[in-house]
Every structure is written in C-alpha cells, then in structure tokens.
Length: 399
Image (cartoon, rainbow, N blue to C red; front, top):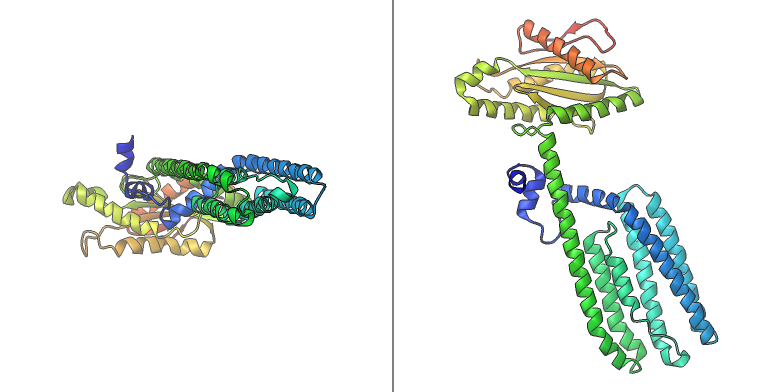
C-alpha cells in the first residue's frame, strides 16, 4: 500500500517523501492540517477544559484550606483572588472555544487560557515559596509538572506553540523559585530538579512523536483520497468524485435559488490523432487540454473533471445566461490555441452547454449536455452548442 501511495503524484505524497522533521508542512497543507487537527480534537479539547477547570477549583480549595491553617494572612487573600480570576477566565475561554468555528480565533483562545493559567500557577508557586517558612505554606513544586502536562496534552494546539509554552513555564519556575525562596528550599529544590527536567524532556518527546504520527496519517489519508478522487493521467477529478461534488453544488444552488451550467467537452477526432501520433502523444494531448480546462473553474463550487477517454465536463455554480453564452466559445478557443498537432490540423473540441435551473438533477443535465454536444458535432465540430435548459426551454445554437 505504501509503495502504491508513494507512486502517486500529489501534494500529500510529495510532502511525505520530502519529510517534515520540524513538524511543518508547505503553507497550504499546513493550513489544511491545522483545520482538520483542530476540528478532530474538539471532544478531547472539551474534556480537557473541564478537567482543567476542575483542577483549578481544587487548587482554589487548597488555597482556602492553606489560608485557614495560616489564619488567613494577606497572601492567602491574594492567592484566592488570583485563582478565582483564573477559574473565571478559563470558563470564559472554554465557552469561546466551544462556540468558535474559526480555527485561528479558537487557537488564540486556547493559547490565552493556557497562558493565563500557566502564569497564575507559576506566580502562586513563587508566592508560596517566598512565604513558605513564615506562614508554613506548601512549596507546590509538583504544580510545574501538572502545567507541562496540561500544555503539552494534544488538544489541537499548534505543537510549536505548546512546546514553547512548556519550556517557558519550566524555565520561569526553575530560575525564579530559588531566587524568591532563598536558601530555605535549596536541598529540596536540587533533589527535585532532575525529576522536573526528565519530565519535561519525556513530555516533549512524546508530544513530538505523537504529532509526527498524526501528520504522517494525515498525509497518507490525503494521498489515498487524491488517488480515489483524481484522474491519474490529467489530475482532474474523476467521474465518481465529480458526481459526488456536483450533487453537492446543485443542492447548494437549489437552496440559494441560483442557476448553474454544465459543459460536456469532447475532443474531436481524437482516435485519429492517437493512431497517427501514438498513445504517448495522445496522453500528452489530453494532459494539455485538461490543464486548460482546469483553469476555468475559479470558485469553490466550480468543477472540472475527466469522465473517461477524451471526454471532459465542467460545472459552474451561480451563473447567468450571459455567462453561458460566452463560456462555450471560450473553451473552444482555449483548446484551439494549444495548436496540438500543428497549425491546420490542431485538435479541437465540441462542447455541449446546458443551463440548469434550481432543483435540476445531475442526470438530467448530463442527458441534455450530451444531446447538445452531439448537435455541436453534427454542425461541424470545433464549436459549442447551447442545448435545452433544464426546464425545457427552446434550444439555441452558439457558434
């Protein structure tokens, strides 16, 4: 299976063969991966947010207990207030992420929640370290490990951001804690440091390999999807993929009460050209024609596909009659301009053009476009013919 995927020529396979040691793809693939990755971790992200809020509430309860044990010095009120604000911000961030469909905005909220949580937790740890002996407060050094686990846990966050936040939390804790606590905790701090360093290294390694595995799976699935939906010779959609996407486009046009157009394109005398020049030359001709046809769809719902042999199809969503009157001739001219076969004997195409009303069926459009394409061939080929509309209006010829 891997050999079959490696032999395919698409962006996913090229990226996988080039490798991605820094866990980053080409810009378009990176954007697609981030969107799918963010959406795919929605349930995990929700569950993690709930656990984070519960953990913060637990720490808030401990702050109150520690404050009670120390007869509520001013530092305890500060701890309770800061932890309460962190809980409120985490709840607001959770609500925003849960209801935000835009990936970029959602990711920024995730970073904000983790950043505020990390900052407040490190600050609280430093406060407890400073007042450790005076008020008999705990050191809470294990909170750093919990923070690193939280930040590095896979919830759809960009891996570079997660690793950067984890390192920042660890370094700020390791550098500032001895400074604020003085010599009171030197022995305990030195004894605990190797465990913290080893934990950070292990967590970052696990996060790296987890991310790498997910990216590899993303590329393999993308390659298989491209192979299943793309014509191997021309790179256009194949018949099966076009049928599925065209039905979606027609359904959208029906909901929006928009007209659509289908063009059936057949290469004139292609068998004669293939026999005269050989199959490799015929394949190159089809690839060149497909490249020209691929340039016509410019909007998300517009499609170009190879139906088989020398037959192609174009679908345009949300059009008017003026567009339909132009597009068939433009397709013919674009193929003529290739001059495949030389001047005077260049390959041409016959185009059947159909305007589809809202609610029309794909099968009906195929049939009408096929009839229009046959009329174009009957009238001498190298031309487009505007056939009957999907509602049965009178046929009109186009040169």
